[in-house]
Length: 408
Image 1 (cartoon, rainbow, N blue to C red):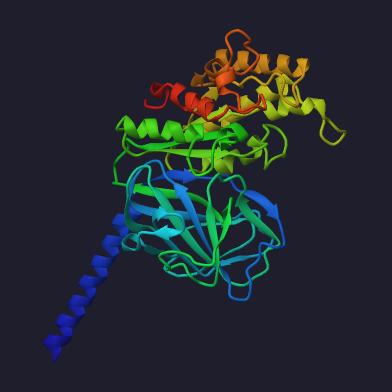
Image 2 (cartoon, rainbow, N blue to C red):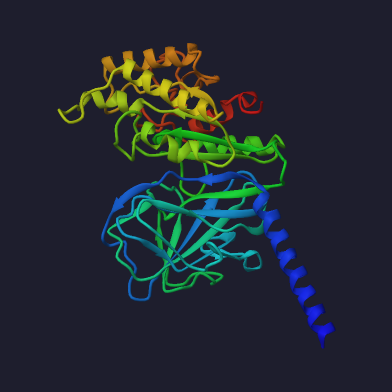
């Protein structure tokens, strides 16, 4: 009997050590971001779970692949605690359908549910799941009945996502669903690389509506960072993720269309896992604002915008992140164009092209401008509003980034 007890004790100790070793191996992996969306506040009392609760199935298009994954949930703009009653991740088969053989339960500190206090985010425990590069991934969240007076969302997803009544996170396909065009309560997907692998990393695109993909078609992943991500994967560069942190209407200096780039820099760039580069395309909305100023929101100047870009570079360099400046694209004839604004745009672009504070330059203006009228978009790249590039223009921008800027 003593021998049996001794054997059982030895087996339990061995099993515990094995579990600890396995967990430690997974936890020791290096993590990089493969998909992200910048969170925004949505004050809307209709976004509340009914008595049965609500399942959100949200589709994200990753960049880099990996053998392990974790998901970042967000309640950063919530005014009440947010309880997530269950979470799953799986490869998408299109629409609301998942590939059931790939479905994994997401836990948080070993628990199936988690409550996010207001103003916080939570990173799931890692799970073993092989994700191919450029895959479409479905993240399913069950939100039990609760008051949500302000949701944390990314409003301009350009991606069809799905809501269904009740806890149906394990369903292969959702029925009686509602389609939505925002991402709710998710802000990132991260993949694990082998311990000691330093070849990979993340590239963050910090920007406004042009980076967010306005004027591209929904469900096509036609934003310029998507194009850049496909080029990087085609170049066989392993473990390099491209994270889109663009917000429609965003500004450098003031909150308008989400928090300003200066305010959200820490949250959206500096704390991203494995980030090595940030590519900044911000400022055209600050310039456009000079035609509609108010006492509470006065006009900015080229000098104040340049100072903001200098601050972004300084703060990123403190974290060992290289900064690539992107020139502001033409905007003549758009609804907030002005001669004064054009002078500001040219001054900011001159600084971007010549500044020693930056580690490189992507000349988006040169890529999309009309050579005959350099202050205008090339007609083939103009969406029609004279501010946003169309699908061809976004493709040209993504294809025009010199990969050597991001691969050293």
